[in-house]
Amino acid sequence: MFIENLMIAAQQVAILYVLVAVGFFADKTGLFTEKAARLCTDLLFYIVTTAKIVQSFLAMEYNAQTAKELAIAAGCGALLHIISIGISFLVFNKSPAGRAAIFKYACTYGNCGYMALPLASAVLGNQGVFYCSAVIMSFQIFSFTHGIWLMSRSETGEKTKFDIKKIIINPGTIAVAIGLPLFLLSVDLPIILNEPINYLAELNTPVAMLIFGTYLAHTNAKSALKEWRILAVSGVKLILIPLICLGLFKLFGLSGTLLTALIISASAPTANNTVMFAAKYGKDTGLASQTVAIVSFISIITMPIFIGIASVA
Image (cartoon, rainbow, N blue to C red; front, top):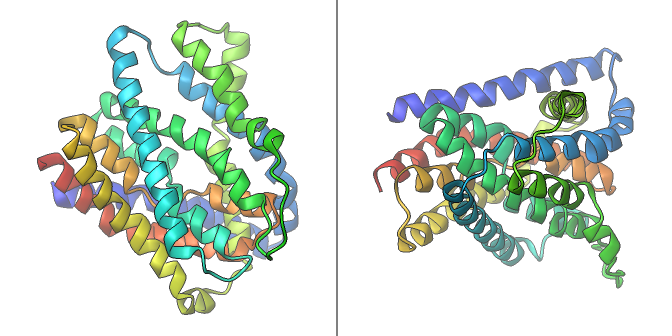
């Protein structure tokens, strides 16, 4: 079981990095440069991401049992992010200005969509995907509220205005506001609306990875290895947070498929959104790309270990 989970996780990371490599070489050859990628960021941020969130709600079938399980998984997903926010603040609050936000975001938000969902599907089947989708709801709400606040605020010491409009009115919260009623009311959209949403949603992973690859083409791998905080992010995101969540969820009486799916989400590597948000809000995209790359590589080993522990816990 351990070897099987190791191969599944490694395969997902390998697929991701094939797309990243395409973006990397496209930048090096001038076909799709970092400048062009920055112009695509708003397209990804405002349109593609919104479609992806709405699609995740439309894919779920509503009934009393699924609604209950959705609430439990979503509640645990919210707890996961609250714990992660607290730990990342304690560990990285004294980090250099301009870098603290990236390290905090990288610790808090995991790759629930690309890594956790396919892994849950391979290990647990459709039920596991459903539970992980509930965690994605929490991810979207937190990342597009706390995440935007974190990445958009100043780190140079001056006071910053708390822009509640920016926190509330953004692609994540708007998409949840659209998608949640559609799920609760079991609405079947006509094909003329449903298919365009699906087409746009399918752009999420390839476009994000291509953009990531162009940023990676301008980063210095040697400097990444010299930044000990990236390794600290790896330790916190891939080991400390999953361990805490495993203990708490067991304390709550969770077990079986639900527990394993939640731990798959908790142990996922840093979200690709880290790079997208860094680009959107003027943070260091090179550092963000380095962090995502290194944490993702290390997760090839750590994710199967936690999946194995959760499956027998």
